[in-house]
Image 1 (cartoon, rainbow, N blue to C red):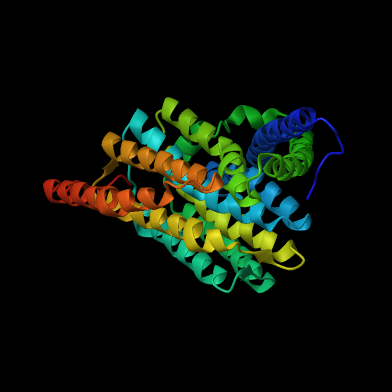
Image 2 (spheres, rainbow, N blue to C red):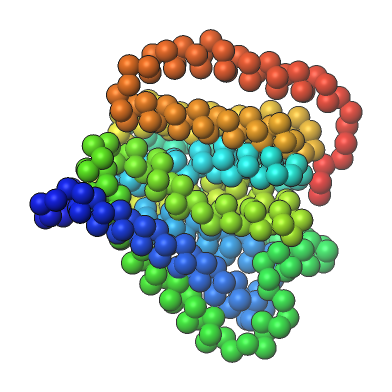
Length: 374
């Protein structure tokens, strides 16, 4: 546990909060620099824009989670590792996807239905099974990290069959135009190096700040990881999805969310599991509640993605409302509120059945068959 030797608790809290905020800021700036440098370098040396989007950009938006996961694993803070991955995946689906769908309905592509969403659900279930023995072991980490290598290799292979129109779309979305080819390659290398340094420094400061913040607030590091850390490291996903909406690239907005969740489990938790000296210990609350919620959130994508050709605004609002419900529960749990049993009863007796009813009604109502987007 990291605690500052300061007599005045308010001053200590201020120092801790500043450390956390500065670390978070360095993470965001570092991730942005890394994404720009890597995409521009790849474009300069002639890598296709689609491959850049499927690999480097997806990896870049998960860079804060990766930096936090590796740093927390090396520092022996497993709750922050697991809380960040699980919390980010829940936040990405319920909040980021919900918010973007509320702003504008999102098209559902054939690849998402056939490959990425089922893969995300399968990986969420695999993570739950790995956690049942109380530890994400090094062998589990190796298995997960091997999975991301296979996923990237498969994505690159699939990209070879994509038409020129799709290539142009990714080129525009990721700003990898021909003008970049005329820029010196070493500028992009410098940007990548600077981004990596900022990520490393920011992740260390954020982990230290989050650990101390949990101590001063009297809540568990798991709760801090599930809330403030996971939201902070999901800022690149939020920014990418909103920018994609502004540019009318709505399929990129939704693909960014699903792809990030896949990378979080395979790459972030895989790397952390490999590097953690004693593996990643799974807290009892995470095993009983948070990881199952992550699995349920992933499974909840099935009726939404398979019912039609778009994620509608009301479906986005439903996802968004569930994130606020989940946050309320975390607050109740952190404060050990006596209202938790009543909250459980309300969810089981009303909210879940009501959600199932409106999804079934929507499925029955939407009978016309419309070709899916690409």
